[in-house]
Length: 591
Image (cartoon, rainbow, N blue to C red; front, side):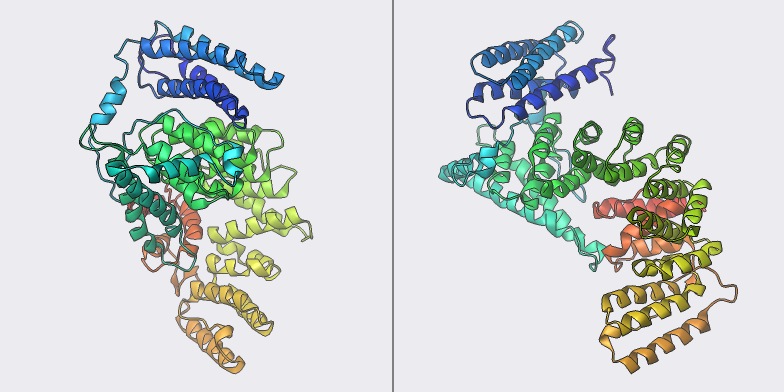
């Protein structure tokens, strides 16, 4: 979104974002040097000013003058230190771009008192987060970067120094910092506790979520005391200190930093998150995905689009994963990623999923061109996406793929699994023989026949569970037993808990009971009843449904509704409940 109502500013946002990106790259380039504090401070101030203008907050001549002064300070600081040619050129270019941005914007923006935004922020009322986080108004300082020395030093890291200073504080400030640390640790642990194991009921995340939100609100209250004369926490700097206190990559601490900042009504807060992400260990990337997906900051979606332009495929994956969970789509990002030469397989797979969320008239041409990809699993992923959009070219491609002779090529086997899963969820009775043959050759794929739901698959599954029992593969037998139950209902026996004779006797009893209730017209079945689209919602909504089943159910729901319904099964429970209620209303119109 460009600045509104200002003639001649159609290029304002790209200009500001481009200059900000140059300053952030420069800040990262000098982060590991100990003699660049003055230069780093000038860069941080420039990033903060540009971010405020990108957010369309100050729009005042004083802010533009500050940009010009920051450019001058940047040049002066650069001249006082020795840098290698590449870094020096980057800093000098950033200073020039900063001055140019100030000149190009001068005179275009209506004057407004400097500091009005900050004063308004401090006067806004704090509203409690119930079920989902509020976007809390907090004044955020210029972003800081974690240096390698701070990340690896055994002693003296900035985070430990700040925390030691906090422990040395006296009176009210000491109490505030102690309370804040308790909140940090609770957010770190609750961010992990709400991530359920596959066997846990999905609603079990609810109590953890509200405690997480209560701690978020408490931190904001500590930052913004009712009495203006009372000490405040210094929330963002304290969070940063907490996050870098440990020298090992830690999901909880990373989540505490990224999630809290993603719930502040500040564009600058997201610059802290982006810079932290770009300096973080890959093991912490899932914490950033969760923070982006769960956060309430309005700048998150713009930030994800920006991250899609990163050169590092792992950072692009973070952005695409979060974008998918938020149910957002950006056409330009989808097109650019699909057209990018030699993208990483993981990025391409997520870009295909992103493209499938576009309106059908835009998505189908993008996806159809990938059907002829020399990479078989790329073609299969595109075909599966087309299938969810109701395009006949999708299932046609998948069926042709399964009709080819089976080989040991890894990519070809991945493509066959994609085809098996997509066609099982599609549930067409015309595919039953093709899928039965494929699944019988793919032991790990055999339980997918339960999702297809055709009664003719029961003998194949019976043979599979007997083979698994004979081989002592009890985990495999358990998955096949679940597939039998998904078709025929009841409680299929598990060989791991029974002696051989007892297992066979109970399996025969289950099979007799299934045949007795099997409808004469042989329809697709779900838990012993003829399958209907509403069965998907019934299972998704049931409080006892295990979390491990829900990602597949969400895929099936997307297929049935042609992606008219978005559900993040790892999202806030309240949001999921609303989405499911809306889906139930929309489902009859979609089928």
